[in-house]
Every structure is written in C-alpha cells, then in structure tokens.
Length: 109
Image (cartoon, rainbow, N blue to C red; front, side):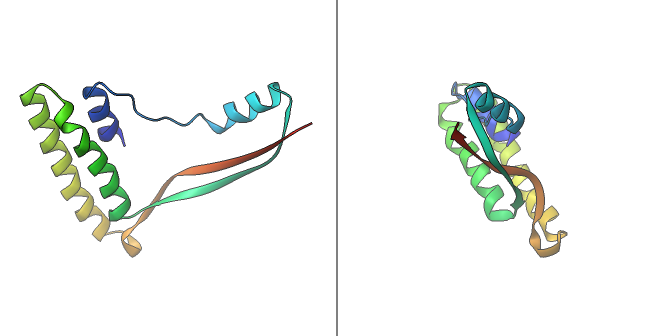
C-alpha cells in the first residue's frame, strides 16, 4: 500500500486513511457515545488482494505528468508484482496475515 499511496500522491490526489482504533474509541467517548464493542479482523493477503492494490497504483499512472517518474513507478509496480508472486509461492496456502480491519459499535447514552 505504500507504493500505491506514493503513486496516488504523485498523481496529486489524496490516499485514503483510516483513523486508529484507539483514537476512534476515545473520540466516540468524548462525544457522549458509549462504545459497546470493538471487533478486530485479521487481514489475509493473497495474490488477488495484492493485485488489486497494485492495479490501484497503476490506475494513477496517467496522472503523473513527469515521464521519467511515471516510467520509474511503472517499473517499481511491475517489479513488486513479480516479487509478490515469488514470495506468495513460499507461503502456506499462498497467503499471509498482516494488519487488521475493525468494526466499532457505539450507542448514545
């Protein structure tokens, strides 16, 4: 996602970012809401999921004005794509876990 975000920034757009869970919980409480549940879901990455991120990076390339920079990013994306294929071949089930998503439930007190 760092390479994807770099491409987005070079295309003069803004990458999406989630707020940290502790900040969300703290802010919900400060606004008078009661946090009733926090669920964490591990992220599992396989080639399809990684490929979607690389394709998101590729979709920004037409918006990078500098030809040399755009060509360098194309090579970086293609190199990372090939590296991911090689690494995933060594992972059990062709996938690995990294990071997490979350759902926070809150109610008005």
